[in-house]
Image 1 (spheres, rainbow over the protein chains, first blue to last red):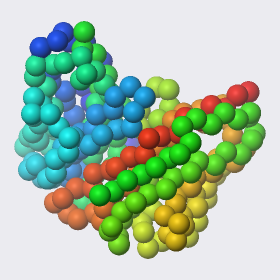
Image 2: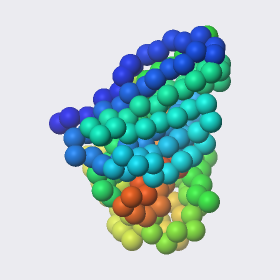
Image 3: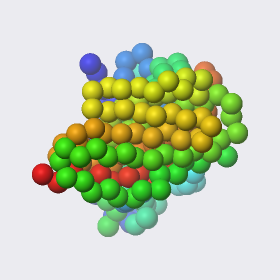
Image 4: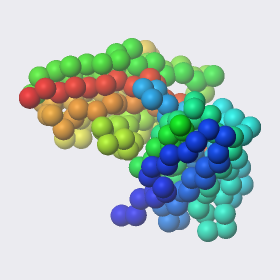
Amino acid sequence: AAGVIQSPRHLIKEKRETATLKCYPIPRHDTVYWYQQGPGQDPQFLISFYEKMQSDKGSIPDRFSAQQFSDYHSELNMSSLELGDSALYFCASSRETGEAFFGQGTRLTVV
Amino acid sequence: AQKVTQAQTEISVVEKEDVTLDCVYETRDTTYYLFWYKQPPSGELVFLIRRNSFDEQNEISGRYSWNFQKSTSSFNFTITASQVVDSAVYFCALSEAMIKAAGNKLTFGGGTRVLVKP
């Protein structure tokens, strides 16, 4: 069965640079979520989209933005990167009221 | 506000022992969902179970079993006859009632690291 696809899997950026993470949800899933997991921490909700509209927002820094496109894929844009942004970023998708399935994550390292 | 507490940060067992992971939650919602996810060393989050607040029936899936007790706001997870491949971080999570167009963001507990030694 198709799963949530995230790219890239690993990303190394320098401070103050910009990064873009991509997420391709499971086909026919209408909701996409982004989570950030710092080292040794639990995943923290950042933002979600339902049918291409932002549906909920968590502790997402102003330096971050996200959108969902007409083909349902989503991108998380992070600017002015800081060392503290180093984390595992997960995308998840769900259909209607079903459970969320997670991608394998993008490991971002800011140096 | 919702909160999930996993009091055990790390549990070490020898293979074939049983291990129970505790999860206690707080929510003001009357309808909610509880989840368990497994995060192996490779890093991905693997869905294990979802249970809604109206279904207190315990569930068993192979070596995994779950005990949902609404009276104590707990949703504990037991691995029977543990194996080395069970070594991972296990997260308990909570979401409010899944309302279409609002999404069902998850609030995670801090996770419990399980180490199964051969």
